[in-house]
Each structure stands twice: as structure tokens, then as C-alpha cells.
Length: 329
Image (tube, rainbow, N blue to C red):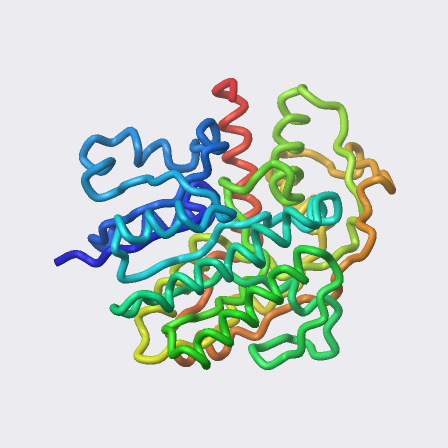
């Protein structure tokens, strides 16, 4: 009998890649969809438009993380063996503007799901997508699963709460509950309000004559950037183990925003020096620093390692944007 998986945030970047991965492994996949995301399902259109997949091996259910009754009904109906909790307000900059919403969706939403998990007689394996933002301004480089939490933004605080509660429910109630501490991961499906997509899209627009320049904030900011396809593989591997544990998923390499700019604009055949402007309005009130991950535990226990390089990822994203613009999208 096929395994059943439930994915919160299935319409997002990670959710769409994870759905593809699980379907390829012959899972029956159920996705939680927000009522307000009806028009934002482009990442899974290729799945829902396929009559051989949709409502046969892929099923969508309406619910909000703020609606425990609706969430419980979805779990009852889908009867999952595995739950991948990816949903939440995931943009650091926006979390300063809507901190209460960020905390309710990202922190309390996770708690609601954990409470439901412990009510089921059959053990459901639970994966929580945590974030490197829980480390904020760390004292240790690179960071591993034992580093103390020092979040410096509302999103990081919300993720720290959700991560700790996942640990508490695993240790207190014996849940098979894992945290995947995910460092920045990108792809052609990244939202346009994230800096990597903004840069790749901007390079393509300038190449096509649709824009004259691209405005950014701090281009010296450093991040550990990987590819979302690699990271969803780690999510699945974490739930296939004999015992639940936390894992860092990262490349172990730091790259600056300026390196994203250089790679994207060169891939588009442009000189970035001619087209980049800076605006202090794009600077964040409090910025995380030196977030670079040590994924040696995931490598040793799961056999996980990133396949995409930074350059391959940014070049691929830029080529995708050029293609979209040539198609009028």
C-alpha cells in the first residue's frame, strides 16, 4: 500500500518540489491549501492539470494554520503516515511589518499541528521546516544542530519557538518529530520578493529592455545559499530513519548578494556595474550575520549532500527568467 504524506505549504517553492519527489516515490500526496492562495498555485499547475495525477495520487484540502478544526479534519481525511510542515510566513523583511501574523502562522501554527499529532493512536512522522534564522548572530562558525539560538528578527523568533516546541513534543510525548534547520535555498520557483529571484528577474528584464536598472539594499550581506531541490530530498530522508533527530541542511559556503548580482548579470550578458543602484530603504532593521551551516550530521547519518553549486543555481534561475520574459510572462 502506498505511503500517504500531508504537506502544508504545498503551493510554495519547497512544497511543490517535495510533492514532485514524493509522487515519484509512489506516495499518495495530500496538500493543505490556504483559501487565499487560489490564484497562487502556479508552482503546482503542472501537477493539478494532469488528470493522471490530480485527485488520483495528489489531493488538495482547504485549511488555514489558524483553524485547528479544519486542520484536524484534513488530517483525519488524509490519514497521513508522514506530515511535512512547510507553511508559514517565511519572509524575514516582511516579518518586521507583520510580526503578529508571522508569530501566529509560523510559531503557533506549528504548535497546533504538534498538539494534533499527539492525539493520534498511530504514530505520524512529523517534519518541521526550521530555519538558519534561529541562530541570528551566532558565536560559532559554521553552525550545527547544537548551536544556541540568537534570532534577531520576528521570523527567526517564530521559527525558534516552533523548533523548540518540536523538540519538546518529541522528548515529552515520544513523537517522531524532526526539525530540519534549512539554510537559504532558492530556485526558479522562488517568490519575487526574495533577493535572489529579484536579482535574476531584474537581470532578465534589463536584458529585454524592460528596466533601466535594479535597486538593492546591502549587497555585502552574506548567506549560505543552496537549491530547494536538494533540500526537499533531505526532508524526506529525515523521516525515513529509525529515530527522529534534528538536522542542518546547508552548503557550508558563504556568498554575498553582490556575488548573486555578478553571476546573474554575467549569465544575462550584462555588466552589473552599469545597472545596480542602492537604496537604504531596502536595508533591514536588524540583519543576521555569518549564517553558514555545518551539514556533516546530515551527510554522515542520511547520506545527504547538495548537488547544485551556487553558480549553477543562479545561472539556471537567470536563464529561466530570460525564457519567461521571451514568452511574455
